[in-house]
Image (cartoon, rainbow, N blue to C red; front, side):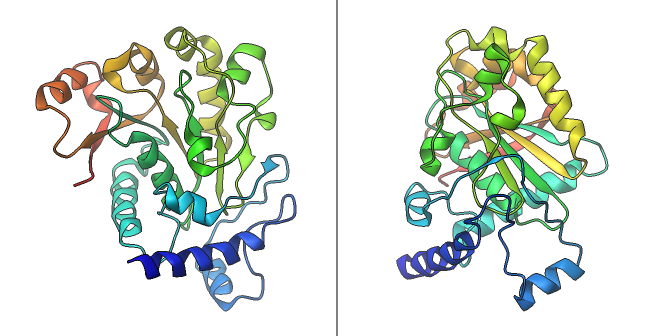
Length: 267
């Protein structure tokens, strides 16, 4: 298992080396595999307006962000999850997904990150990963990248989206994570400015999915105010830890028609 992860990290490192220049897509132009993917309908945008960062494969693998690596069993589980999401959303116009959990520590952030990694490998879609846990932004910490600005800078200070979006050197994926913590997060997540942001992101690119990592349901009112703004909700439940009563209580706070399903984590 360790050797497989090392081999996958090595391959991932080679891919990242191709993205050292701003706005250059992570691909090898002379690679036969890339040519086959292109003929099969591979969508590959160039990120010319977003900030470019470079991830450390060993660091993100150590933080269990494994879904973009090859030959790792965990990646296959997330591919199954991605396929289920696609099957239940395609053709409906539903491309904004909120990932949450009943309680803290159940793995919702890692699920959101790995799901985004997996969507980046899908042929006909791109993905934007947004850290919506304004009290405790953590996506950039898991990925080991700077987080000077985030969603709160758009909501509170009016920073343009172009200053917030980061391209992590992974083809077809962008992210927004960071900024100062904001304790009155429930109010601002339900603000007209937030609605404007989601509307803009939802309609800007038809092939893009937007994944929001948001706080646990039972820790505050954030999810209650945010859930009406997104299309679908994925609930992460940690196996052997989360009491069923808490899961049932959490579900009562969500619009039933938007619950896409559950992820049983650490099973």
